[in-house]
Image (cartoon, rainbow, N blue to C red; front, side, top):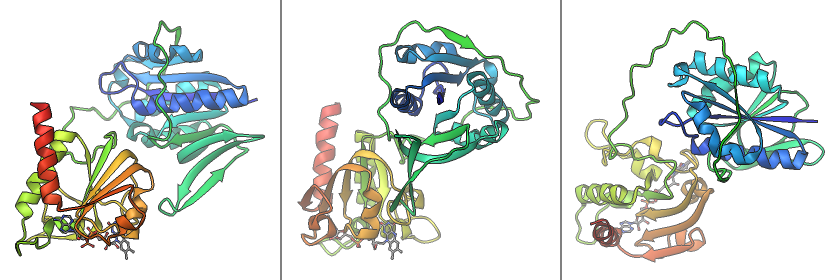
Amino acid sequence: METILVLTHVDETGSALTKASLEAVTAGVELARQLSATLTIGILGVDATAAAGAVAATGARLLAVSGEAFAQPRYATDAAGCEALCRAAQASIVLAPGSSRFTRVAAGVAHRLGGFIDTHITALSSNDSVDATRWFYRQRVEATISRDARPWFLLLDAGTHAPFAGESGAAQVEAVAVTLPTVRTTVEGLRSPMRDAQTIRPDARLLFVAGAGWTKKQPDGQIHVAEAGELILAFLRLSGASLGSSKSLADQKAEGEQSVLPFLTHMNQVGQTGSTPRHAKGLSTCCHGEEPHVVGWRFIGERRAISLDPNCGWTRGKADVVYVADAFQVMAKVNALLQARSA
Ligand SMILES: Cc1cc2nc3c(=O)[nH]c(=O)nc-3n(C[C@H](O)[C@H](O)[C@H](O)COP(=O)(O)OP(=O)(O)OC[C@H]3O[C@@H](n4cnc5c(N)ncnc54)[C@H](O)[C@@H]3O)c2cc1C
């Protein structure tokens, strides 16, 4: 008989669970139901007890590791906290969100417990055994893994489960004591890029992809890179979309090593040699829609494209809607509409 522990952590408020943690809770509830297994949820954070109300409706046993030591992510304290939660729960299966906070410590915690870990899990199911699904070879090959070894740690990719949304209520939480190791790392603060500079937004509903066409000669025989940059940044600001790029655009360099569009880096690149982000919708602009690029759109729900070329890859079955139009004109109009709506 399996015992399931879902490890969760709080967000920057210190007292609410992250969206990825709530997704892991959904996965835990579903798996526990399939296996008729007992479910425990472990919460780590400065005020873990306050966060527990959001998962009270699961009916799971709730364990919390709280205190100032867990106000900031840090290997030594987070690993000790997770280890304490795992030992208290005595679980055979440990699910956790593949967040940067837990990705850093999960393998170490699994080792301390004498367990095994698999990462980037996208789905869980159970027949006779527990099966976990993940992708290999840049999302081309999907594998189903099962293991006899226990405890088995599974880090779940974000966006693969709906966040748990039960009614919040008063929760009975068991506080778990942690013996803290000597702490050598002090977190002095956080420095994050300006909103305009932070163009990769995994939680955005929309992925906006810019292609090399933005930097090509336009029907008037001129290039309009500055205008392209302004249109793209204005759209990102007004819509909150995440910015992706084709390889051809990300590869372009102006004088020196700076990108032609200075807010773009290879981190934005989507495709075979780039990323495969998950968003509900995607809008491709000035991009041809070739296979090595479109393979990165595997997890985009609804695809739309704006291209001047009526024969581009998007029109050949790779997009749901294609606007054969000038993206400069379309995006100027879209920005004006968004601006009017936000005014
Ligand atoms: C091994 C390998 C790996 C690769 N990996 C990747 C990858 O990870 N990601 C990736 O993106 N590519 C990758 N590529 C490259 C890929 O094959 C394409 O070359 C690339 O995606 C083309 O980028 P693009 O569509 O932006 O540029 P182009 O092919 O130059 O297309 C530009 C498009 O913009 C349109 N356009 C121009 N002006 C306008 C306008 N005003 N309005 C609307 N449309 C306009 C044009 O009609 C054209 O269709 C890889 C290739 C190889 C061989």
